[in-house]
Image (cartoon, rainbow, N blue to C red; front, top):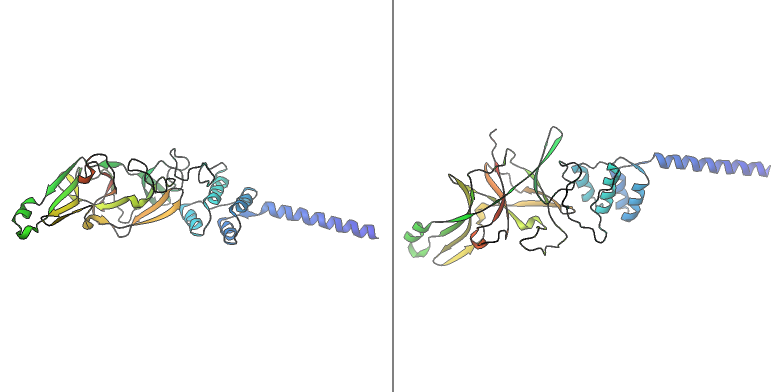
Amino acid sequence: MKSRVFAIAVAFVLAFGVISAVTAQDEVMTNDEVISLTKAGLAGSVVIGKIRTSKSNFDMSTDGLIKLKQSGVGDDVVTAMLEAKSGRAAGSGSSGPGVSGAAPVGPTGDPNDPMAKKNYGIYMFEERDGQRKMTQLQANVSGQNRTGGQFTAAITPFGLGKVKTKANLPGRNAAMQISATAPVFYFYLDNTTGGLNTSSGIPSTPNEFTLVRFNQRSDNREVTIAKENSWGAKGGLSDEYVVPLQAEDLGNGIFKVTAAVELKKGEYGFMLLNSGNSNTAKGVGAKFFDFGVNMTP
């Protein structure tokens, strides 16, 4: 009798183990489960192990990635999720020694996915009818400057008249013209330098850029970079040309950047501060990633 009861108990345990194994195999991990495990305080290595031994159905869209970041999920865990989603190694995002945290040169994956690897640069992101598009802004360099206001300064009493120095870009309009007044940009920078790069290196943060609105002339665009009168001088961009920016760090050298105000019709450019290699005090050699906002089709 005892042996029969023992055999039944063993059979029950084995059956329970089989059911548990089947249940574990059928378990499908989602973003919410990863977030729950992270908030429970589990180490990233544990979460990654769970990802690699489970079936998964992860949402790796732009919104999904941003939610993961905002929920405190580590870059190494997100990388494991990307690998599970694509079925191959992502090749970036590891925080291990000797691996760059920057968006590396040599794009892979969907070129219109903001979180896919891309060459260093500034890209505009658009999404229409469920279709995403990334367009890289090209750099334009100021080859000359212009001084204005000398006559006014000469006839203004007490030396209060101001002389302005202006950096110029050729052409009245940028090659890239957009209709959006609240465009979204992604900066792919080198965050491995800790901000210690030189002016000839890859920027590490959007703080090294300023968005300016140009004054359009008949054949060029200009922005005031210095003012002076008989009583003193002021260098740097004039406040009336500067558009405030908002930047969100998405990790791995990727930043989502938007203007803090709605853009009006006109010509704009992200100026790389301290760029150029000749006479930068006068704006010659200054680098702008320019575009125009034109709401008229």
